[in-house]
Length: 264
Image 1 (tube, one colour):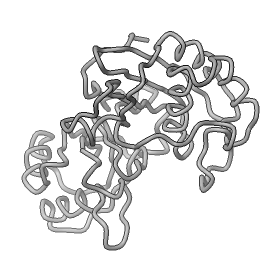
Image 2 (cartoon, one colour):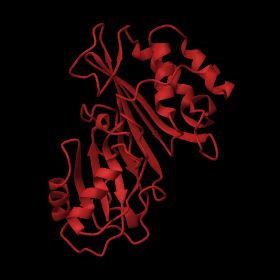
Image 3 (cartoon, one colour):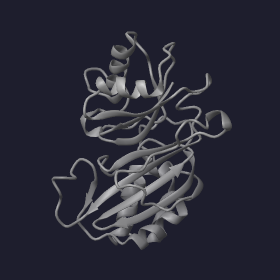
C-alpha cells in the first residue's frame, strides 16, 4: 500500500521514530496497528526533521489486508491526532518503495516578510523582518539549477554518500507579505533546502550580492554559506515516481498557500 500523509511538524521530533520523543512515523504506525491489529513498519519518501511539515509525504508498507482505498483513509484518520492525516491511499505495485522508487522530491519554504512577527504564523512560516527583494533572490538562485556539488549547503552531520545533487526547478514568488521558495531536485542533502533559503535571504535583504551565491556554491565549504534557517516554514509538497507502473501514485499536493508557483 501507499499512503499520502499531511502533517504539522511542530508537534514532532521529525518523521523517524526516536526513543521517548513523538514522531510522525510512531504515530502513524500506532494507528496502523490499531486499524489492522498487527504491527506494520512503514517507509517514507523523505525523512523530515524536527518542526518540518508536509502536505505530501508518501509512505509505503506491506500488508495482507484487502480493504477499499477510502476505508484506509477514514479508518486510519480515526486513530490519528489533529496534527496528522491520511489524504489518500493506493494499492501499489509489489516492487513499490516510497523512498527508493522516487525520482524527485519537491519542497516549499514560506517566509513571513513583515517588520512584526505574527503569532498566527510563528510555527508554520519562517520570519524575516527586513524587506526581501525577490528579483535579487531569483538572480542569486539561478546558478543553483542543474547538477552540482552542494557541499556548501549540506549539514556537517549529513551521511549522504555524495554531495552531488540535481536541482530541476527553483521558483521564488511573493504573495502579499509572504515570500515562497519552491525547490525540486532528484534528492536532497540534510538541511540542504534550509541552507539554500538562508543564503538567498542574505541576498534578498541586500547583505550579499546575487553573485555571492555562485561563490558559495564553488567554495564547497559549509562555512561559506549563510546559517541554517528555521525549520518552521519548510514543507514537503511533492514526490515524483516515473514509469507506467507507478502512474496511480499521486505526484504532489498544493503547498500551504495553494498552487501559486509556475507550472513546469
